[in-house]
Amino acid sequence: MTGNGSDIMIRVRVNGSEFAGMVAPEMLLVHFLRERLGLIGTNIGCETSYCGACTVLADGRAVKSCTMFAVQADGSGVLTIEGIDTEGSLHPVAAAFLASRALQCGYCTPGMIMSALALLTESPSPTRDEIRRAIEGNLCRCTGYQNIVDAVERAAAVQCGEAPPALDAGDAIPGGGREFRGR
Ligand code: FES
Ligand code: FES
Image (cartoon, rainbow, N blue to C red; front, side, top):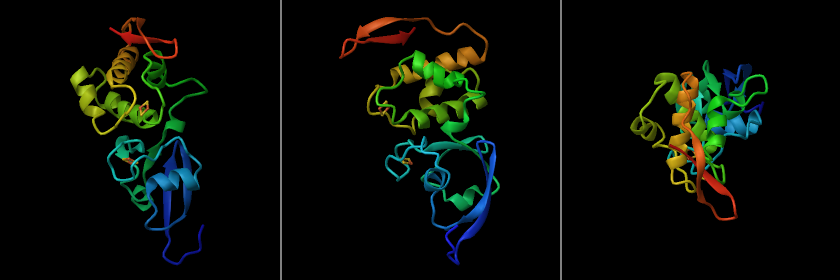
């Protein structure tokens, strides 16, 4: 509550909890989530709609929250990375990212997972090309994307009750670890 006369009343359901309060008309949704609600899992990269680090779901649709004003979310249901797990269990899409080693620094990961969630809701069994298209607005500077596509494919298989692609030891990675690749 800023007390500024131009502030606007909004009501938003975020991760299942209702928020009702005044926000500045120019406040971006990503800043609202991070600064007002403390949901800092939604990252800020470019703030120019380019990188996808800030992706959340608004009424089930993947949106870049730096391209939306908080007031535009009035009346919507917003889901952020903090809201995807259920009863303390890692969400299957997040688990697939871990299993497939689909992250390194992890900065892009919340946005990638939210884009993957939107895709898998719309298309439960996507092709690899469909996966690539769904995440084309999410940039990753670390992974080369291959393992991310593997992860989404793996999550789709789990979601459909199919056996996920086998993981096996792949190339050694710097630091002595092993990189695992889905087949
Ligand atoms: Fe929103 Fe980069 S921070 S697209
Ligand atoms: Fe570093 Fe994607 S894991 S940007």
